[in-house]
Each structure stands twice: as C-alpha cells, then as structure tokens.
Image (tube, rainbow, N blue to C red; front, side):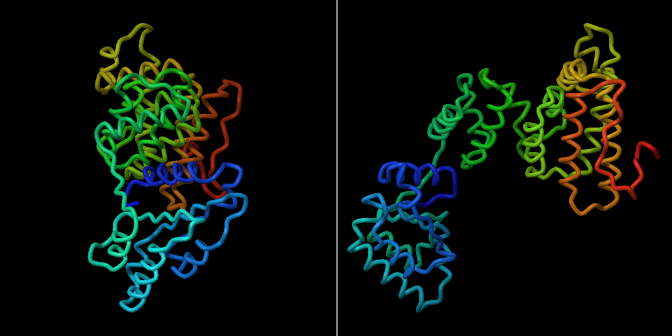
Length: 338
C-alpha cells in the first residue's frame, strides 16, 4: 500500500484485519513490524510462525523506505530474499507492506511490483467527501448536507486532519447537526486563524474543545505570546461589548473597532460570560504574558494552564470568590499586581 495519507492506510489495514482475523484473536494474530527496526529475515521468520487462535495472521510492515537506504549488497540480498518468499508465501500469513512511496529505480520496488499486489491509496473529490461523511457516522454525529465535502476540500490529501477536525466539530455540536457556521468558527487552517474563534468556546466553558483549538493554532504556526496578547485584546473588547445597551446590533458594536462579523461574535459571547469572569480572565492573561516574557522553557504549558483557568472562571465565577491562582512561581510577581 503506497500513499502519504495515514488515515487511508489505517483504514485499509483495519479492513484487512477485520476480514481475516476474528476480533477475539487479534491480540495474538495481528502483528506490526517496522523496516526501520526489523530485518527481512526477522519478518520472514514471523511470517512462517503459525498464529494463535486464528487460521491466519496479518503481518503489517511499516517504514518500508528504510530498506531503500541499505547498501548495494544488502539491498540485493533483501530483494532476492523477498522475491523468493513472495513466489511461495506462507499460507498462514497475510503480509502487508505500507509506505508513502518507493523509488522506482530500487530493487525493493521492482521485487514488490513483480510479485505482490501494489495499491496506490489516494482520495480526492467525491472520494474524500464520502470518507468525511463516513467519519461523521463513526463518531455518532450528524452533519448538514454538503458540509462534510466542504471540510474535506479544506485539507486535500490529508484525511487524518479531516478526522481530527471532525472529532472537534462533533464535540462542539453536542448532538445537533454540524453546520458550515461551526466550520467557520472552529476549523483553523494556514489561511485562517483568529482568537475570536475561541470566544464562543470559552463562553460555554468547553475546556476540552478550547484545548483542541489551542493545539490547532500552534500547529498552524501561531506563537504563544501573540496568542496571549490577542486574547487579552479580545477580553477587553468583550468587557466593552457588555457595556453596550441591550438589543445592540453588530453594527452598533463596530464602534468598538471591530468588523461586523467580529462584533457579532463579541456581542454574543459577552452576554454569556459574566463580567467578573471577564475581569478575572484579564488577570490570568496578564500573568501568562509575564510568564512568557520571562523566558519560560515550556510556553505551551503556560497556554494550557491559561485555557484551564479561563474555562474555570467561566464555570465558577462569583463576585465573592477569591481570584484564581495562576501558574506563577513564588519568585515571579504577578503582572496584575505590578
């Protein structure tokens, strides 16, 4: 199996396992090996071993390109041994090789091409859309027509990322159908990342979802200090939005220096987060900013503690409650106190 999409490879491997090995026997009759860590001699020996509790074992070998880096003599010996085995394979073993790609000029690719079934795994267009819709079903979620295809189009050739985003969307939707608006709010791509996408999540105190958003933002290249700075600005705008008259529209909120679509989010979230929680959030943000600027070795940990604190103040805000403890050390004064 050749292809760079890990989700597709796993999907096919799982289908092979389900076809040949009963669920009760998979602990003993499904074996995974790596060309990076195992020699062909070791794998050939395993393939000849009769499996326990099953007439057939599935033996999956990953990292196949490691064998392409062997020296000339070793590569020749490997190709000859592999070809000899494939001409008379062990009847008790389904042997599966997987790799991103193989060099056409190498002996390994030639041996496999001549003696094994070569499958190139690709998904695009309607194929990706169908698999995205299947993910929704596997998660026990629902989605509006056409939305699965839209999400698949955002990450061409990367169904693993589609799956990750679908899990996040299903968690946020919480039983209702996933919508295009949910994708616009939650899905972070290299072209679109804004802390305003966090506003509704924080308003609902959904810590797990906020952590997923943070992970997506960091993977998309966002830096910790600017994230904290943008969140602090957002919290100040939320406080200002709370002071607008009841019934104010998003166009009324544009006087706060935001675009209409951003103002709409600000109005919605500001009504759902108590004023005291917003003030406590600003304190936590100031302290996180101080920690980051002190050169802390684990900035991601600072952000994770910050998200935990922002969601906890949302869930348990009380005017009489003491300000939540921060992640500052005893030797680091609070930015708020300064």
